[in-house]
Length: 360
Ligand code: SAM
Ligand code: SF4
Ligand code: SF4
Figure 1 (cartoon, rainbow, N blue to C red):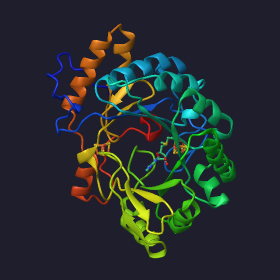
Figure 2: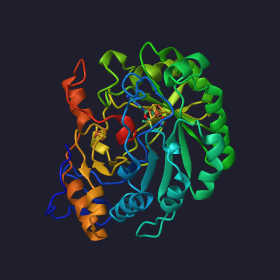
Figure 3: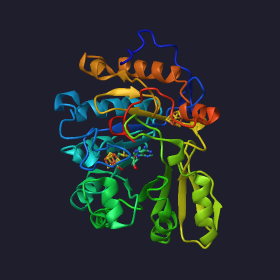
């Protein structure tokens, strides 16, 4: 079910230096934009084949926000305080003409005339052919997902036999195009790839690429998540620290999802994203816009607010800004904090939105 935009949004809780604040005094800083619900991979923890098979009904083209509509939402969001845009999906590089959207977003400026941080998360499969065009369009950085360095296992996880070496080639292509330093995301799942923590760290150590370990999350309802599948960040840290001592680093900006650790010998850093064991809702400044234009104020939200009908119904920028302001001012989400406080053994039985739809 989709909630409606508040007719009379509450008066904006606004501070001159921070922009909009939500009900927990968290500013709106990041907007994650999902540009497609489709993907050429079927990662077992995200789009399992049994559920995303041949008959799966992906959205029709006219249901997706157009690039002009996305640009409008992004522009108005930037006027309200957003400073970081991340393009995601599904697999964002599958969206035809994605570089045209990048060009529109790269042209956005904050009220102070500053550039907005513009990044994209990808499975890397199309980077060898797309990296240069993305850079030329104005993309600044990419994050590439690599969950295993074993060719067989990598192919088993993506479940479409896509080869690891082509993804690694994609990372190199991104760097050659000027999209570096590339960040790498690795989701660690107990019994699947937890034996590769050190190998992953050592592969990327000293390369200038920052590897971020993500705790496997109970996002969506299709992956059969259980608490026992989660490998706590503390365990990951211990494993790496024993071989290559680490020390904590200050966050590079407020609300950063990854806790940063630096190799003491100067060989770079890693990030730990402890969405399950160390919830960071208190500093969460992220909103998400789904592929069909629903605004979600939390990755675990059960419903979004339909902005597409507003955009297609002739609303002007002021009306859009008022809707976003009202939604952000009302925001009280802190799902991960509540989950860890309740220390549930399994995920609460509530219908959540799939990651491939809402955007990771
Ligand atoms: N297709 C792109 C990719 O794989 O990078 C972008 C979308 S994907 C949904 C974004 C990120 O979410 C990926 O790094 C992926 O590994 C991560 N992800 C997906 N399902 C997850 C889960 N259940 N727990 C933690 N991370 C997850
Ligand atoms: Fe596709 Fe990314 Fe999900 Fe894998 S994690 S199925 S690549 S959207
Ligand atoms: Fe933000 Fe929701 Fe994740 Fe908490 S659970 S960090 S509020 S997205």
